[in-house]
Amino acid sequence: MAKNGKNTVKQKSIAEHLNLSVATVSKALSDYSDINEQTRAKVINTASKMGYKFDTRSRKALVGKSYFVGVLIYGYTDDWQHTTYFAGMSERCAKMNVSLVLHYVNAADCEQILDPDHQPPAMREGQLSGLILVNRWPRHIVRKLLKETPAVSVVHQVPDVSLDIVGIDDTSGISMLMDCLYQLGHRKIGFFGRSGQITWSRRRFSAYADSLCRLGLDLDVESVCDVSAELFEDKSLDWDRQIDYAAAQLRRGVKAWMCASDRAGYMLCRGLMDRGINVPRDVSITGFDNSEADRLGCRELTSVSVPALKIGAEALRRLITRLRHPNGPYLHVELPCRFVEGLTTAAPNAEQVPVQGAKPAAHEKNS
Image (cartoon, rainbow, N blue to C red):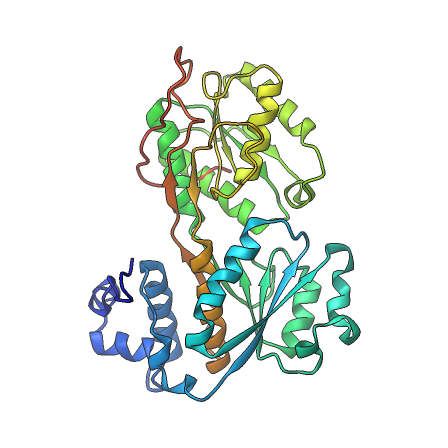
């Protein structure tokens, strides 16, 4: 979106989108004190979604002030997003006068982050200005952390907790994938990977249901396969029961599956292949996030790519804004996905295995 450090998204475009003056947008993006917090929040959120390149160096409030920011990663350490989010934050550190403190917390011992003896020194000594929370932190721990330090959550919402969140536009991502399947001719499309414990899974399921309605298709609850949060988070567990369920749905005419993540997609693809089912000749599969390095011997999934670098950078920028405007409204910033044409989608009952899926159209959802 930006080349050679220049913005391709202009403040004028943001102003026209919001029906505001360019002067108001400029002041909101530069954190002038005469802009009310609701307007500032609206401008910043819209600018983020449009891909505006923020110039933090020009902000007077940052001059001469530096911050220590703790990045607390909950649970497992082999997930691709961790390093990519952190890389995105790191790219912005010098311009924002920020030093990052990275700390992994094992899921089984997560309570220890509240104990000074188990905290990183900068946190224990009260040097951290704010926190960036990565992965599905337990609500009671987030509440206690917020009593001491402002925080921003990456992707995950925390129920009943007021918190800035920087994540993904799940609705548009699911919509692109659903339109791909619909244009190929699929009318019975299942959802694989609904988890009530994981906010991004719920949002993607909701988007799936919305797309079904938009496309004039019925929601069939038997075509929805639930997956526990533990299966998503612990790669040592098997998915046999869930894959058996999906395989059985072929007899009911379910010839396409919308998966809640690439991990779910590759697990389903591998499992169906091991049961003698050809992907994509017999069944089409889409993923979400274009993230998995280990494809388990499967073809590349049709999926959407998540802008993890930008999410990390935006999370850091959002936290600094929160530190400077502690009473401002909480925002949920959603960054757009990009459609990735893979090799796991085809027209239903196709005799030949095609090498391409259809181009996406509009919105999707599965519930």
